[in-house]
Length: 335
Image (cartoon, rainbow, N blue to C red; front, side, top):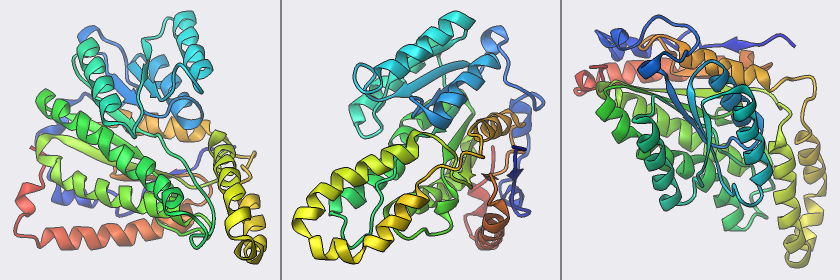
């Protein structure tokens, strides 16, 4: 299927607030990331056991970047995925290393970032990709089930970003790419916890885009806009089935009331096999390769961009107007 990649017409307006000045000189002309001795780009990606993360790890490495592919449970649930990536790196002579990183664990995040910095000296690009969906009607979800979406997708992402930022600042530049979703803008009933988590992380990334600009750190959000077939949906169904066992015992009447909703939810979690996850990976690689200071702060990929981009454009216009009148506007500039 032909790749569909669009940026909001207002996607570059924020650059009128974030004056790019001399920052563009920090990176060479746009193009694939290539290994050039000490200039080899260093990329760290979270959630690389499958799906978009796995494809991105392979793609960046094949372009010549040094890649730290991170995932949790490298000796457990994801042992096979970790071994497959290591074997690929050996077979193709790729600069790709698998590191244990659990976005929910401070010590794990700190250790992984410390290892990457010790081995490579810096992290040029962070792709924050790890994410889950715990579906179900909000009324029936135990607080911990609803919160699980936010803990991983928002707080987990921010935990990694905050650990990487000081190193990027010390290096004098950096790029953060946060994987979100079209559901960071549009709400899908029965996926309320997931939508909430993406709204949180999108708002935080918008704020950081302003706050980190003076440190020459760019923040971009990528919104896949389609049910790309990955392990994501199957994992979501697994989380639902785990929760369902408790609901059948504690809230059978309410569960019966929501039976039609649940049926629709499960149908909605079926992946669209006409879509190719490689489209999203390729879009992220293209975004990362753009010249510093020209990168859009939000990118949608997939069949539903026409519905999401007007919302993005309206949001961008509001942000540009508001920040442009801020007495602190001069602080939000690329140095």
